[in-house]
Length: 357
Ligand SMILES: Cc1ncc(COP(=O)(O)O)c(C=O)c1O
Image 1 (cartoon, rainbow, N blue to C red):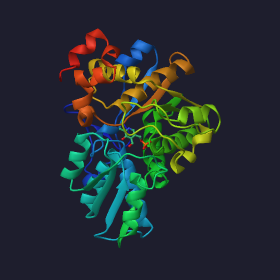
Image 2: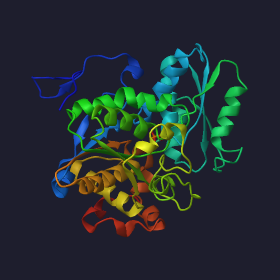
Image 3: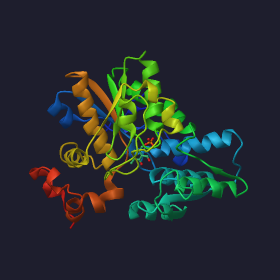
């Protein structure tokens, strides 16, 4: 299935796109991939939106562009200004690209627990990266508060505030949601994904629910250590955060303003344990040829489970957030897998992909 913006090149059988304007013009219009092996194995139709094909390599390119465009439209930033954000990685990467393409400076505060690959990439993209101790949101030293304070101390600067600025969810409401609707021709029983800021889930969820007249069910998938499943199941009780996950960029201890715009309309939520996510990560590589990060693998596990709940043969869409490149030194290292107690979660026939010591 191809969107209306695409034509099929008859000569060589490859999809071709018309030219776009720079990095920013290349964000979005990603393919919707039918996960054939996984669908056939489970008797459902599972699709993954290939957000790793955005020019900055992740779903967060859309949020980054949406946040900056929104600030420009409101006159909050002028040429030569500075964009400041607190981010665990992918939003920073998207913002660093967008800032280069638009001529802004980019300053990124991040918890020092994030992977070295992400920190290095941000620096290569010209961002001023400031790793700070990983402390809870309630602590004034949290990376988000430090980002806000720094932006406030500068002239012609914005704090993009990805967690609570709903321009993030709007970017998905106006782009990702309509693309999925068009690519599935409205034949979509369920949509599910995990959340960090909640922008992807809230924006896509709102669009699909409206467009389907409430027929498409929207569910939230959670990693261990996040409070969102219990929040949804208890209809609004926030519990203390406990536990952790190998996934990066997802899981939450609170209801962000982006998630708040949609949380009451969710049909449900459930938690996916790390052993299922890591096993799916290897299976996606083996059966689909897709080299994806752990949040994408978690999303596919959740999509299969949701399809089972909705009934045999149902169609479920999820998000393939980013590639494994940014995490490969961990995800394909035997030592790291053993340290997380996850080596045994990988089926024997897939262990050949554990190529790093
Ligand atoms: C790898 C990855 N997956 C998923 C997400 C979640 O997206 P959202 O912030 O829109 O909830 C993020 C967010 O940073 C991410 O980096």
